[in-house]
Amino acid sequence: MKALVCILLLLETFVFVVQQQVDGGLNENEISQQISSEDGRQNPPQTDTLRAEASTDRQQYCDLGIPDIHAALRELTATVTEQKEKNRELTATVTEQKENIRALETQLRDEMNKKNEEISNITLSQVELRKENRDREIAFSAALWESGDGYIGPFTTEITLTYKNVFTNIGNAYNPITGIFTAPLKGAYMFRISAYGHGGTAAGVSIYKNEERVVLAYAYQPQNTLNSSNGVVLILKVGDVVSVRLWPNARIYDSQYNRSTFSGYLLFPLK
Image (cartoon, rainbow, N blue to C red; front, side):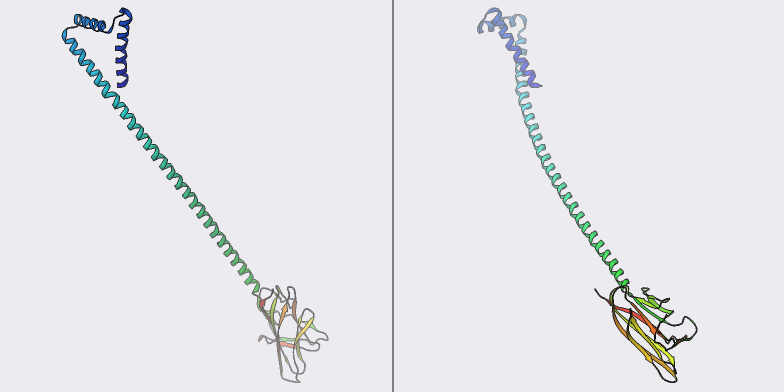
């Protein structure tokens, strides 16, 4: 604003001088004399003094105002430049922090996914292991009579015995209605039988794998009690059956003491 005022004052003076030259064709000396005479006529002596002081004030005003504006502009420009630089640095810092945050989020997400996958795998492994262990939990044991006592036999042909007094049937592979054990998985199985009777008639039973006789428990004497037992380890495939058959013309006895039994269990699975 100060600069504009100074410029206007200078222009006013310049226009006045040019106008005088155009109107009267006066030279510089004449112009100066005319101005002096006119000033002498129109203005008292103190007017020259005031005019000189005003001119001096205008010059000082201009001299003081213009450098102040330039200095202020330079200072403002420097401040804006500095602020822009700071803004650029701040923007770069913010961008870097955002990148760091994104990288950290990605790392955390990957680690969480990895942990979740590991937990899922562990859980699946535990479930499969529990299932496998349940599949391996195969064992049974049973005696002939659920209650009371008595003989079975003799018969002229072999018959499959049904051991109805079930003590244990883990895995439900033994059927007390048919007396047949069915292998639920391939493996090595241990089976045992015991036969009890009285003298005069033989006490004999056999373990069968499918339709093949494997082992026999047999005893005979004219009098007194008879006891016989046997056992065998069999390799069974899924679906193989094991049963106990009474020998022809033999008989066995059982009571609440459970003397005639059939038992079996899985030793270990096979691939």
